[in-house]
Length: 414
Image 1 (tube, rainbow, N blue to C red):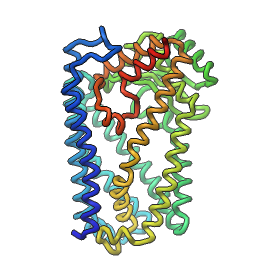
Image 2: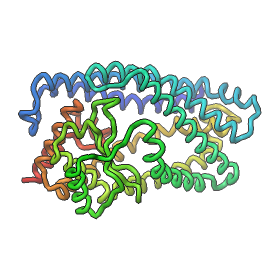
Image 3: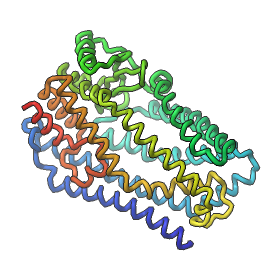
Image 4: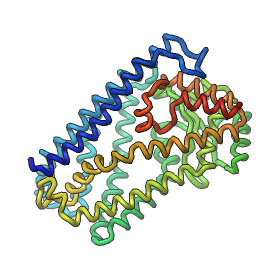
């Protein structure tokens, strides 16, 4: 192995090992602190539930750690030992550029999907079943996997084929036109997904509680927002986990409530949770997040263009004459290293928006006690870790730790 490739692989595993160390640190912190009832949760937890939370968090983390190590080793082995023969084997068939690229990446997608099967099975029928979350049946699991693979195949073929056509048509400026195409496609999917893709997996019905719908619309009116529909989704078919979200943009915006959420929260609590989601729209968090990601995507595509032009990738990976597709895989491998320093920034950016939405929940919902009560219930129902290590949370938490959120919300309410 050349020194340049050895350095790249070493950096790749150094970054991965840092993440694994954070997971281990988080587990040790949970073992040391997990038996304590945090402030704001008194009367809602007992020793048995705390032990259940610790066990679930630890089992999820250990399995996730094993999955991450397996995936990282497999990716490194493929790039170092199998990328060249795979690239040469496919080139042997003499397919046109676009067709070869579509086949190249689809085969990798299928390989990843196949290798993920045992992990998905154990998570659904092992861990989630053990802790009473999963309602998944073998037939439903197979149906979901089949539909997901079909949708992935269609969308990937369209994206890859169109992207490669752009690259072939404009060798000098493909990075700019490709960025524009991906941006337009993502907007199109925001309109399409709620009506074409999401119904393939779940059933969506209009919320049949007139009083709840009216209260939700009043909250939205305070924020100057209108939505096309307020719906509930049959999430309980697969899991007892709870959630609520906005989906769609423009005239197709809608609120979706998990049926499990509606079963466990009273009306005041439901309205407060929806007030939080309303805060995201009022604060234009989706648009701000998109603007940040699109700016970063433009920089990444330009950097990719320059690297591909320079021939540096072929030199680092000792693959002279590598196809454009193989070099794209090399870029992805190096990209995990380059993206690492940005991980805590994006987590902080998301947590900042969540705190703003929490303040909006009080402003629009007007009931801090109901909202804090809802968060306590949701953390109990989902067996959320109440004692994350601060460094782990800083790197990976998209939401502030729930204990901090409950304390801040109660402080807002005086």
